[in-house]
Length: 208
Image (cartoon, rainbow, N blue to C red):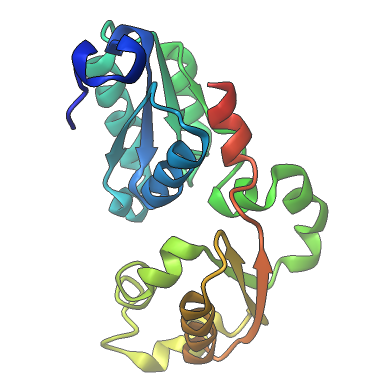
């Protein structure tokens, strides 16, 4: 990414005055939207490949490498990842590096609000969640990695214990709503849409 120069930044802000956000690629659209909405010209964003979620054990090393590359060039570094299946390893690495990260176990939780999500987690043990990103990338991140494109007969084995698909919507988009409902039908699940907006992501970035 282009980190910019003093001449290119409103108000003469330099990278040393800016916040560098290292984010999961699945959050790129949402973070850029928040940056525009809030006028966060002091925020620079670099996204790691969203497909790291297919191998969560690789996330801590990838984040650490990005932090070390940016260290010394920015006033503050913030990691826009939740635990994301790393079993606490990412939090431990961020603590060692001295950088903050998003709170919560995953994006479903912080988009809905960690406290809200935790409050009904026990009631939704048989729910499969999608976000805006996952609706758009359903085939790339769900259908094909689970082998359902090659072996559709696996669907009932993989999703037989689920009851519903809940689409946690960040935006009001009729196309995404229709696509999410189609994803639920492909998985043989009931469908529910729940608008969350950006949840805890917005205040976390605002604080950074």
